[in-house]
Length: 245
Image (cartoon, rainbow, N blue to C red; front, side, top):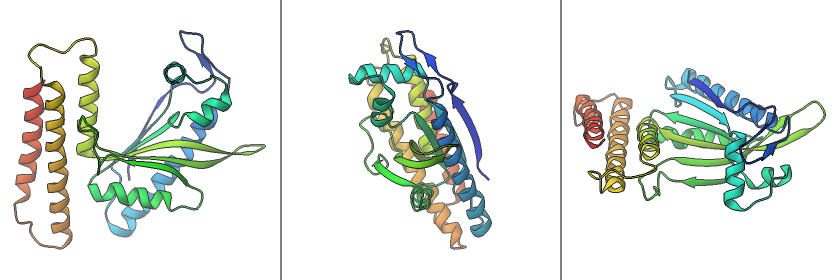
């Protein structure tokens, strides 16, 4: 069964350094929406593993955006700070990240989740088929799910990011490197962006090779290349990163 990890802000309100205030209890409904969605994903993970002897979800993490981050995003986009505007305009206050073993699992989990009657797909962006310029790959979904409260039902938006282990590995290190070099780019790393994009290609190739190995194993025959070469591919990917940073 998939492992889970949660992080993020307290949900009883808060204020950022510029005076933006999140009303008390405003973020609570987003926490509940995450819990609803996490339950759905855990059920899919465990039931699919039982039925098919394969868990399509490696692990799941979640977070509620912090008040400071909400305030920064509103100011950057020139939006009002009233709760109605925040609810309507911001899609990523609640976020869930789903990491899958194989590329096919990414799309399979997305179909199973959005196929449920009470999950409304608002929009999707496929950065797997169409990677960002920096090489980032992931499938993004904005879904709306019902949260049943004591006196009403609220439909709450949640951003769901689905990616493979290789995509998650790349995105995590890319984020750390960009954060490290926010103020200045090192002199010996002139082609920093190109290097990152190149390693993203390597990660995509690894995903393809692992998918091929999985399909060959499912057909109960040995892959054309020994499985060990796939491990060598991962080792080469790691060496490439270590030599680049």
